[in-house]
View 1 (tube, one colour):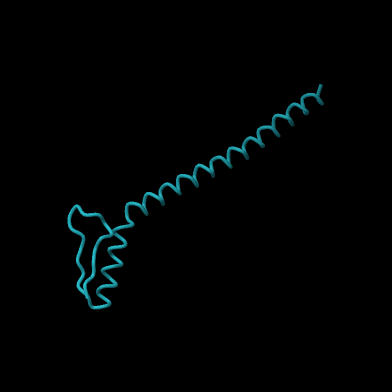
View 2 (cartoon, rainbow, N blue to C red):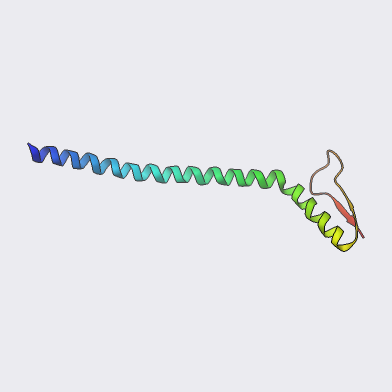
Length: 82
């Protein structure tokens, strides 16, 4: 009877520990997917503004005249005239 109990306990313990490892892998996968979504969203929203910022810095270094983006215009369309 004791042997049956120990076999059942070992089976349940092994089964639960294997499922825990699987759940951990799924959790890491979800976390990586969410991080990727945040990065893609940030790059999409800030990409044009960052491009304008670098255009302005390059223009000032070269001694040109920077023309900012008009209100409502697409970001990333600023210009630099020599």
